Image (cartoon, rainbow, N blue to C red):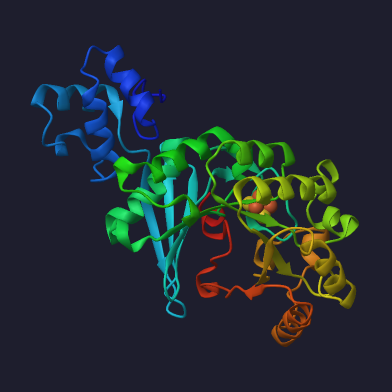
Length: 353
Ligand code: SF4
């Protein structure tokens, strides 16, 4: 229920919708119908539900909320065709999603929290601090609002890599995935969904045991415990070693390959010894490494170590990648997608919050 005492229908799974419809004296099959209208036909108003009687549509509009977000701004990168969407929640918090086109796929990067409590030193969202978790409806609506504009078929992949740590908003993230992948919504394959985490070992294990079998990306950024702790304070609570055990379990249980995300930071994680450490680490489990050029956050006037961070020069990044490849490591370089529109996580939303 939201603060207008309306029931939030968006974000309810099919079984929750069935429970709700039965509890208000409606037929159970209505739940399946509305599930289809909400997530497949993408309606935001009960009046669009053609096969519901007028009375029922009126009742739903009076007591239920079908839309959790408003699209308030959109930016387009002429360099890369990346598009950024700024959404306002009902309590006027701003969150963002990014649509990243590639040769064979269009990936939508979505947020799970307003801000983030983990304070990674290279991340704009981390500087913003934590406001609140998003509801399952708010997570799902980022996808639906973009899909409404471009067509569902245009979004081939979803990554939970926007603002926030998805595993700290575990239940709502799982509910959103259940909706995205439900056969009634003609949804996405689970293997086209990736959750990115900074590393909460017990949640990684819980995710493996959930049977969802989505892909998992781990924000590594250094294979050394002490350096990782400096740039990712969460490492002091959950060490890399502890996370590696959980990641091995995940890879084995789901039969998937882990992606290690690695933001290139000058003189911090781009040295010869980092290549060696990455080889040792990545050889322990089925994995690949995504190298990411660092998007500067200097415009946010950060303090402490954040103020000193610089991207590794591009020619040195190429050299680093070649050294990894010589070690037979599978490695990719991610474009600085849409750096002309500040596509790095959180930057547009922070400006507006
Ligand atoms: S990188 Fe991810 S986990 Fe770290 S502060 Fe940013 S949003 Fe949070």
